[in-house]
Length: 305
Image (cartoon, rainbow, N blue to C red; front, side):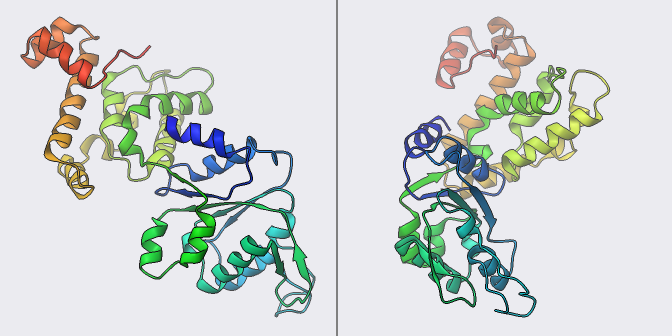
């Protein structure tokens, strides 16, 4: 994630087109927001379009506008999102769901910076920076014929791939702290090692969005200032470890990588349960202190401040 933040810092001040890829819930819109906020167009319009939430006809009108009488119900001329975003930035979310005809129209905008409204003849010139997002791998979509290769190359000037939360579980405590402060500035905390272990060992199919919802729900349900494990949904307590291992196998992780993940999780839990006492932890795990220190160094385990 630090590499992603550095890339945002490099690309934001430019006008380069950006393609953001990642599973649903990983924070693609937040990446787009950060790029726009640190760009030279920060004070200009920032228009967002969800390409997966509208039919082809409605999306075309939404993006490019329409002239009065161009179709049934078009009682007035309407400016499209590209027109409204002139001199600013447009964020096209779930672009992988865009139909082929609309992909052709978008390609023309990227090439010529111009378009016509639906039912119109006047060519409209615009100066718009495009940030696109996809919840699927666009290269795979191109290979399977669902996405135009020429449009992909136009969009893929700078590519940012956001990893799923399960691939950077070490960030979960920081994210939890952020959401606690966001939804409860008064100071609720997660003091129990069991609570953090439940959060850190879950596989998070809904990614950061799912984590945020669970923390928000726990805050609402909590009667005390401490978030306890019983406030979490049952899936965090009874999630199938075999399923988690199966997911890692599908991703191509080796046996050693999977065992390292399991070993790191066990060591982290034991250290927290023993208040980071090396002697008690080594005794609990039935290893000597030298082995414990070596493993802590290998897995970069440090007590959180």
